[in-house]
Amino acid sequence: MSKFISVGGMRPSGGEGEMNSRKAAPMPEPTEEQLKARFGEYYKSRGDTMTSAFADVGDQFKFRGDNAIVRHVEKEHDGSQSLTVQRSTQGDSGTYVVKVQPDNQRSQVVTEVKRSSSA
Image 1 (cartoon, rainbow, N blue to C red):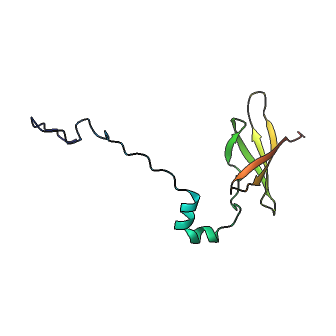
Image 2 (image 1 turned 60 degrees about the horizontal axis):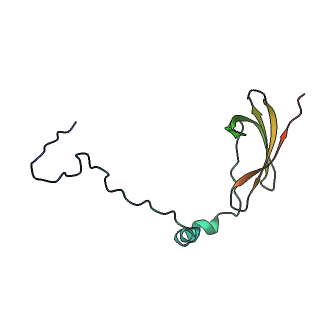
Image 3 (image 1 turned 30 degrees about the horizontal axis):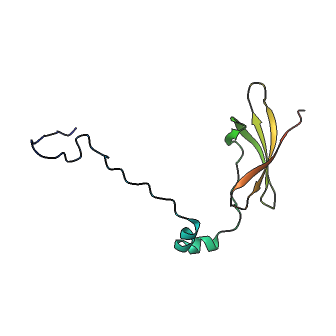
């Protein structure tokens, strides 16, 4: 712990309750054009679609406001995926098939949700 010494007639140095009194303005996010100008090689070498998986077996994610567990993943050649997820909630538990497709903005979007038939 540090000591605090006060000298009469002097302004506080900033460590006596005035820390962070002058907050810097938040930096604006760079635009896509600025990023492409600065990191051109990266943007030229990356593909137009995402190659990473939306979720893998055993992952948890929010599904209709509740946690769901991924039980099975099928990846298609066009980049879409079919996930079998299990959701345990009061009144709406069950297994669902979730279709995920790549978007134009390099993201992945859930396009269809079906409740799977129980055996």
